Amino acid sequence: MRLDALLSRLGYGSRSEVQRLIRRGAVAVDGSAARDPSQGVLPGATLSVDGLAVDSRIERTVMLHKPAGVLTAARDPKAATVMDLLPRVYRSLSCMPVGRLDKDTTGLLLLTTDGELAHRLISPKREIEKTYLATTDTPLQTEDVSAFAWGLVLSDFTAKPAVLDIVDAHTARITVTEGKYHQVRRMLAACGHETLALHRERVGPLYLDAALRPGEMRELTADELSALRQSVELDL
Ligand code: URA
Image 1 (cartoon, rainbow, N blue to C red):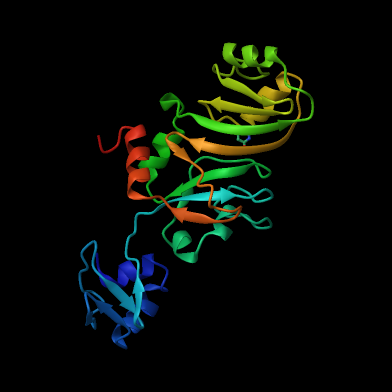
Image 2 (image 1 turned 90 degrees about the vertical axis):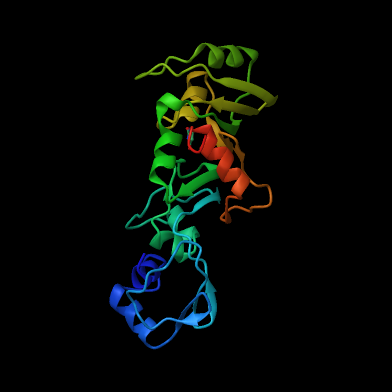
């Protein structure tokens, strides 16, 4: 990729702003000052701008501990979105949410620049498991376990069989393989429970890193990314 195109993708400015940066000698590639904006750069090259190292990877996948009150959307004219919680470079690289969590749902949200990975993870036919911890207004019953296991009939669709484990009277750990709008809240409502809090712990092979506080994110490790890709038959 051309050096000016790469720096622009990484959020260093428009093509012409980046060209000016390069011409004034602010950019080094593999330790040597670069003066030609059209210079080709190989993946993995070492870059710096004004002496500061630049992470030159254009493919990124991150986990975010989504806090309550933030929309899962690329942008919104009025409300805060999950994109506001990421450093600017991720927006520049179009690192997008994989599926959606409700505004008040907390927990694991993946974001990626890899459209094929995102597409496979949300594809209904792959039935990727997602695990949630739900707090309910009324006590959970053993009949709820069975209702989830049979597949709940909702007004517009029948939910696929799901697992509900009762953790305590008002807390259930629920694993579903679908991602329809308000899916878990609606399944609990069909059993007579209002959901007071919903927190996603897991997507496929990945658990939310307990070290991430609400609003914090980190890139996936190589092992995590590899497990995630294998779970959707990429990189087999
Ligand atoms: N199910 C829901 O009802 N809400 C979410 O945010 C995720 C799953």
